[in-house]
Image (tube, rainbow, N blue to C red; front, top):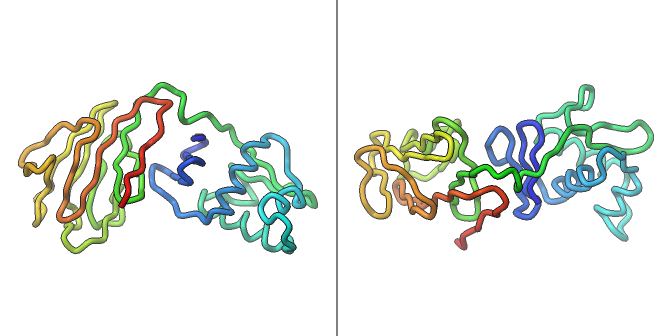
Amino acid sequence: MRLSFGDCVADFDARLLYVAGRPVHLEPKALRLLELLIAARPRALSKQELQDELWPRTYVTTRSLARLAADLRKALDDRGEAPRYIRTVHRHGYAFCAEASDGGSDGRVRLTLLWADRAIPLREGENLLGREREAVACIDVTSVSRRHARIVVHGDRATLEDLGSKNGTFLGGDPVVAPRGLADGDRIRIGTVELTFRREAGGTSTETLAR
């Protein structure tokens, strides 16, 4: 199940969370907490209900749940005093307080890069590849330049371009010396790092490649 809310996308099947187009690390129980709250919306779930689901047959204090909720809010860039997504219900529990839509059945084309076990969504406009922190795929590998290459997205089309990198950008084994259009399944290499470009219609799920 893939759901969108605000600038976030939660892919519960793939166990991935994206915020503003970037993958965000979230421990499994925090992601499960988000899944439970979204599934129950707009109903608030009590602390006991949540603890029974998250820690079945295990005694934990309410502090464990509070910490998990705080981690989830931090990942979503949410705030308890003015919540956009996770609302605290005093002396009861928590509720999901935003609109969420099915991110897998809107009919739109999704453009994604697969790298190892990560699926990186591409956004409209420039998507930088390299070791820079602002890169959509920040790849901290010595063979990769800080600003190695970019993928420019216009609607459902994507173009790959080398940015004067030291070790080159390759598409299907051929060096990229001018902007090249991308097709589903294209293999990209920047330095020694290999990626796969995926172009998918809404309703399909991203295949995760084995390492």
